[in-house]
Amino acid sequence: MKKIILAFGLLSISYTTFAQSTLKSAVAKSTDYLVIQAGYVNMNGTGASSLHMGFNRTLNVALMYDIPLSESKFSLGAGLGVGSDHYYFSKEKIDITNTTSPSRTASDNYKHSKMATTYLEIPLELRFHQRKDDLNKGFKVGVGVKTGYLLNAHTRLVNNQTGHNVTEVESSKYWFNTIRFAGTARIGWGNYAIFGTYALNDIFKSNNTYAVKAYTVGISFGGF
Image (cartoon, rainbow, N blue to C red; front, side, top):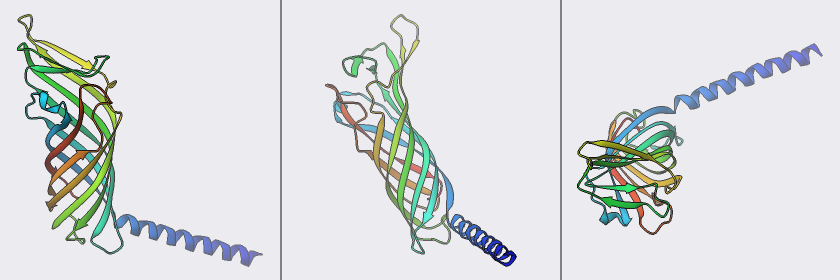
């Protein structure tokens, strides 16, 4: 009986050691990367041409986890991040609190106007690395999708109608689709890349005014 217990104990220790070694090996082949993306965002679709916008900006920050696919130069990237889009309007505003549909109002008294959205995002990416031995160097390409959950949507307007600048902030997610899907692509060298995204669904819920999708292009910093 003692021999059986001893043998079982040794087997358990050997299995635990093997499992820990396997786990460490798998983790060693995967790498965490902080990815920062900054660039231009705009809208495309019904109603977009009626909006007078300036240089809209997008900012995305994500922590990505790189998982090699066997010994090939391909890998999968998955992560969690936050994406924020800022649309700037010239002498007009978008009313996102209108109960009928999102509506546009124009006035020479509008000095500064913007609409901003913030999403919690889960990006997924298929990647090719020229240098699998050093992911910080060489040519790289990545294509994928990301899913976003709307955290906040608001407008900010500086109105000079009374002769004094009055800042008005309105926050509402009522007309916005809560979930956003987008296709993504990156191409670069080392830790720098050019990125682009195109939304697969509309920014707003179905309405009589706007059926628009967001697209972005910019520069990506960080490994992949």
